[in-house]
Length: 212
Image 1 (cartoon, helix red, strand yellow):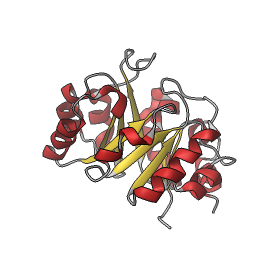
Image 2: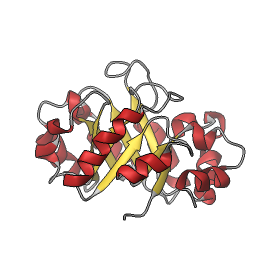
Image 3: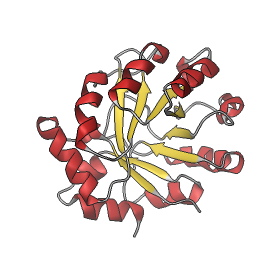
């Protein structure tokens, strides 16, 4: 059983004090910092870009886990890599030449993740599994925080774990109630937004999600 890691999503943080928020969750026991990048095209929301990643890089020693929910991700890999990202994840649904973007991310010596939306079959990414470090299974439709966890997606996690031995990340509506199911099915990295940043005690929130 792989160690369970918690990656609080700064999408749910207070951006008026973002640096302090990141320091606080690191001190509270977070393992990674998850950065949701949205372009208003692939998903119906616009969030942040490389400038924000660059500004938060000096604030924390934790890995910056950058999730590109954008069209044409290959155009922005270099910018996010040079800004200080440690893991760069792209969506299988938007990439016609996924092996090329994997090579590009590797060129900048970053870890590679591939993500799939709730309705995407894992067969779409099977040819890529040997080339990536992580698969991100979305358990909500990407675009906005605060959505409810789609429990039927856990079957996809279970099927993926049977053929993929590296990191499986789950993102979307994760909280202390549904985290055990995601972990049981094989996820080992849990992205949590409001379940961490929406709570008064970050350390207690992280412990509850990890169930420790």
